[in-house]
Image (tube, rainbow, N blue to C red; front, side, top):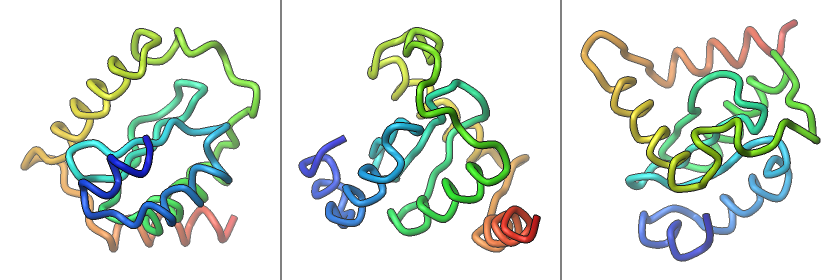
Length: 120
């Protein structure tokens, strides 16, 4: 990921590094097309996205509480062909399908999911 990618996208690099410090062993974090993204390192689920690191952090916490990610996951080869470039291509594909007119996710949906995950 890195500071350069974050600053080019206008994202607070310090906040993104904070998320990576706490969650980088469980989630692959990246900035793709100006959006903060996270994929579970165990290969489960889809891509979590948010325009700001703080929102991505909330989604990661909700996802982790719903189904904790092992801190010693399967080898990276189980994720999108095993290379970061392949993973970023898969994140872009997930983002494209998420932005289709048939699938809409709002911040309200995200906050409801977080509230449900933290209530349990």
